[in-house]
Length: 258
Image 1: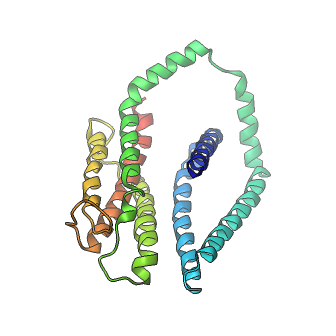
Image 2: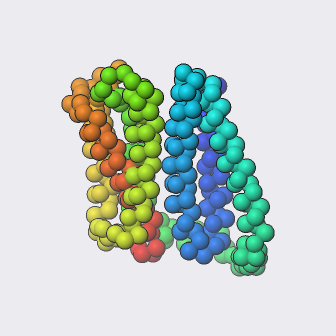
Image 3: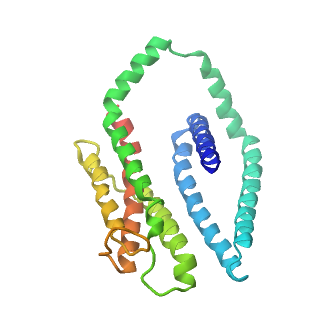
C-alpha cells in the first residue's frame, strides 16, 4: 500500500511539473529563468523545516509525533502563503496581458506531420545533451538518498550524530550545493557546448558512487576506508554542486545547438 501511494505521489508530481513548465513557457525568458532557482531554494527551505521540526521535538525528548506535526504545520502555512501569492499574481496586469497574448497565438498551429518532422530534427541534435542529463539524474538517484542515508558519523552517539547529522549533512548540504552549482553557471559555462566535455563531466560523477559506499556507516557490507566525517561532508558538497552545475549546463546548451 505504501508503494502504491508513493507511485501515485510521483505521478502527480510529474503531472504538476509538466503543467508548471507549460505555463511558464508562456512568459518571457527573464521570468522563466527564475523558476528553477526558486524551486531549488524551496528544497533548501524544506531541509531547514525538517531540522527545525526535529529541534522542537528535541525539547520534548524526541517525540516523533510532535516532530511530524510541526513539519506538516510548516508545510500547511507554506501552502496557504502559496495560494495567497497565486491569487495575487493572477490579478496583476502583467499576467493578464501575457495569458491574453498566448490565447491569441493558439490559432497558428502546425499540422501533425510538420510537428513530427520538427521533433525528429530537434531530437537528432539534442539527444547527447538529453542522455547526459539522464545520466546526471540516474547517478544522483542511485545513491541519494537511498544509499547515503546509511552513512553515519564516526563520533560517539549524541544528539548531533543521532538526530541532526543526516538532515544537515545529507539533505541540507546537498541542496545548498545544488543551488550553488546552478548559480555558478551564470558566470562560468566550462567546458562549453562544443565537443564532449560536458558529457564526460557528467559521466565522471559515477566515481562518487563507490566513494560513498566506502564512507563510515552501520549495517553495511563494503569496507570503511573513508572513516572521517570530513570526507563525507566534502563528497556530499561536491556531489551537490556537480549535480546542479552539469544539469544546468545541459539546459543552457540546448538553444545553442539548435
